Length: 108
Image 1 (cartoon, helix red, strand yellow):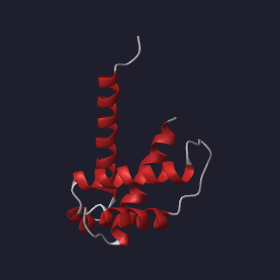
Image 2: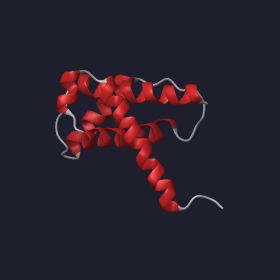
Image 3: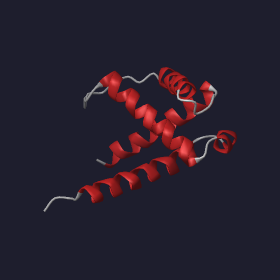
């Protein structure tokens, strides 16, 4: 029998927590102080939405401009009244997310 919807959501939550933990270990100490886990999760949601809108549903290798992604997150966060953030700080989160994705690909 397949996984229940609840099991899928639980696995997604675990995956999100692992991603956040990896990013917290990746970013610099000063950025770590600025961003709590909830804010990093928000950034991840915006990053993943950006990827979906920009690249669609593809398994092809794509070139990701981390500065453009970070700029999109900064702009979206300001628009959604989440706060105003420095591009360089958010770019560390983007780079951490990409690095984490690389570790997952290495496991395959």
